[in-house]
Image (cartoon, rainbow over all chains, first blue to last red; front, side, top):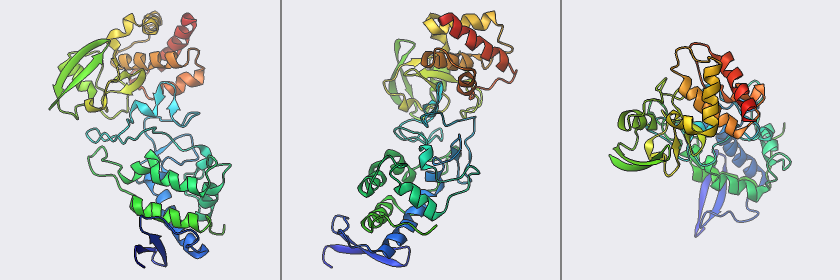
Length: 198
Length: 154
């Protein structure tokens, strides 16, 4: 397997990654894709990601996913409301000296990309998978588009480098590194975006 | 310590401070502009609100190193701002203020709201002002004054 390496995904499936990190088209089976999706799901439902994929009129904060303090509301665009926008506090980079996270274009995910219900309960793996792959909900992204989103979107990248909180301690990060997350997404895409049964 | 060139109320100035210093303390301690108030220090009350590039911003949470080239406007320049002047006048006419400590932040947010939404609905006023706290409870008069300012601004 010269020029390739094996990654153990979820402890149950091995996928082949070609030199340069690109999956060979058609390499991933449905089973491998489903295993990779579970890895992707573990990231999407981590507080650094799901806190801004709410079904409610507010974002969440912290590892306990409490409603965002200070009367912060979603607004029509997901960027807050006039005179009280996300940018009132969130800048383009983390402000570690004051404990405020930041990244370009800080905003809530659209309601079509909610991964929680109205009681802030995280949706099942199958339900999130179907929402993520529904092009009427996901900004018309196909598999390649979803992979690119996970590779390059500034707010996705932020989740893996979330800076320090008000108490100056590092924020927790998702269970995979960004590289592992992208590799798992690639496997899932190569397998045809399979979703678990409801 | 590092030097930062800032544009505050249209004037160029330079400060030599730690990069993590919140803008609030640069304004109050280094530039001696004490109109902007320290309330909570965690962005919860809005007393420290200034405009950064026209956006209502909590100066207590903003390290000076992240200001960049964006112009800063504080309460000290509102008297010469077309919208700020009207808001301050109606604030006086409606006798909004009680202790007054939060009011510079309230006015900065109100001005930002009216510049973004010249004719705000009651709901827009409520939500836009939702991050500014007044321990005297002048909320009703604040909302009435904003509606009145919107009327006067035509």
